[in-house]
Length: 487
Image 1 (cartoon, rainbow, N blue to C red):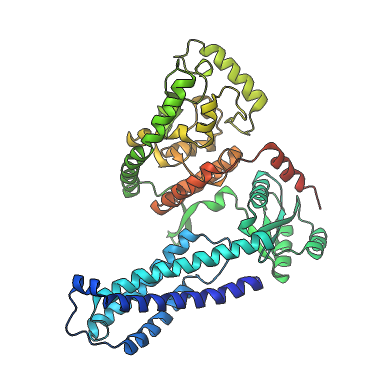
Image 2: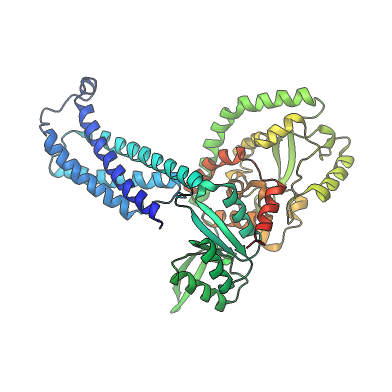
């Protein structure tokens, strides 16, 4: 931990304590407000004075701080996630309230007002989160504009995974990382030179193809020199597993997914409820988009049905707002579909920037003017909420691919077909079409193996900023790739 992070940790303790005590004072004041009194009908036996009340509040604030500490809320890093932090704050505060409720039943004279307990609980969560949001914003400002608390990272290894990490760090300085170098192989002498010249706080290693002896030396070097050692795991290292004893022998059982039984039922209920809500919310945008499409290219349909492969290899019609000119749409409903197919093959060969079985045509000349906006903001995908409602898709999951793309899958890629495809997913919020297919596959497999409803909610919340985020261009890719050659 850097010195700035230590200072922020201490400051966060003080801010949390101040927020909790402020919540207690405000709750006490609110209870005596005439409007509140008229609503709750003041209990006649409530005789706890302010001094006694503040003594109890002081004790409880210390308990809350201890609970926060046990939950790791004072490991202040600019890279922490506010959403997950909010859950821990709510949990810690609720646990403290449970202690108060126990005291309420054992010693009623402590807190004979239920209103104070509930109000202090809600206010404490709100004020603590506001304080943490301010701390996080200030810390991000310092790391982005002043370099305070920035972690210097050395990337070791080859492959698209590390290049992608390098691009993300370069694109988002507010994450709090700075790549000092990227070397292909473990070379302790070279690493020492890099550390002496630039300083190294963390090392991210892709060690799947490196000799165990060299990896061990590198790990020892990091431990001796207080460098955080991080590893990009292989596919087998990321799967869920359980340890069991069978016939007196330890056995590892690999788990495929939690999307079975009640997991599948809860996900389906979640999809039905929220897809219905999103259909209503996005309806005005969809209608406006349809009008724009009709004005610019009135010949073709407004909703384009694209054949995709879903769960268990079943084909379905994926709904999209049409953003291509009708004469270039590759459906057989188009009289010129053969010419459109041939033109698409030419574009795939000359302008596709994806590696693997799928393609993505950059700067697609077939798009309408309105289509550029629809695709850029992912508005063209809004009709897929109806696919979700019909049970063909889920709100979150691997993206569905065309049959010709699925035919080019390797055998292990077909794991993506074991669950319903999604409108958004891990790959979409982590890099959209900037990711290579293998990286996208690994993220989708991680999602399948580690699914929870909470993970779905987090991905959905991250989808909106991912939709409006600018995609990297060829120049930024070239910079990232050439960076690995620079010492």
